Length: 395
Figure 1 (cartoon, helix red, strand yellow):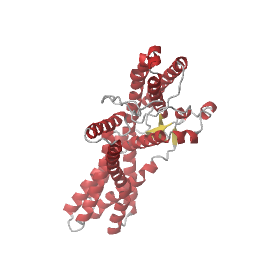
Figure 2: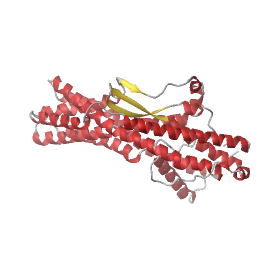
Figure 3: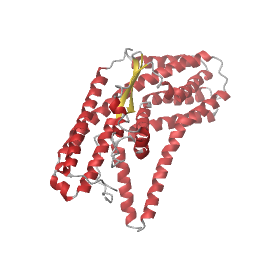
Figure 4: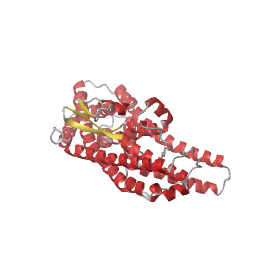
């Protein structure tokens, strides 16, 4: 990896500039914490209203026959299939201050994205996964009720519902719940997950190095392992996002639903419940993100930049390439911390959503020398020990 030669004086100036950026990142996190804490929902007790709506729907459905339960099942798949679009159609939104002319002129989006495409791709998927996780409470609520209704209808009206449809609803609902639960459990957008992948990589290398001499074979086995893991996650993702539409189609093809009013009322109730639960969970999530962000900057970044590893002339004179490489990694991490922001969407002040978003401007200020993919800073959780990966060949 090629590292640019700079004098210690120039390096010191860059370290001081990065300290100022880190201070700004910490101040921004505190600003967002204050803003989120002060933001109030104009609707009183949305979670209590959600519980009442679910109870009313269930009571009404119990007053009808087997076909009535299918209204809930089919509507839940409709709600789930289009909710991800509905939640991005706000009546009002707050995405932060507009960019200044200087910020807009910071760099060419196309050129910088081409140079750092892996990093921008990672940012997109991090935000997508983080915002997807917010659907966990709604998905669990709706599809646990689905599973209950599927089996209740089957046993209460054995002649009216085929076993095939019970298994179809159960498997689909279970996979959807599993998908969101896995995101919430392992947090694939987080630094801890990146460390786990790195541990797996180093463990595999340690096992394979003792039996194989060919670096090409080792690399091939590592790639094969990643492909299997990624393929499994992709299969679960496609099942969770694409199959509900076909499941709904199979149910509606089999059963003729004559009362559209049921569908409209249940759909409205389910969307309300989904949004209320997402707003509650999303608020907790973004608060945690900003708390961890501030803690990471204050307790890791700033002390590190003040340490001899980055600021000592003796350390720099002994091995300037290593110092510059590590500094480049830190700079990339600080820029990432500034690039993740919070977007607020609400309905005239009612039922606000708190979504993770990204601001590309910090990544456009200059061509970052080092892109360290495994040290993700979207959230900084408390567990895990940092892995010191062997340095690449620096030139």
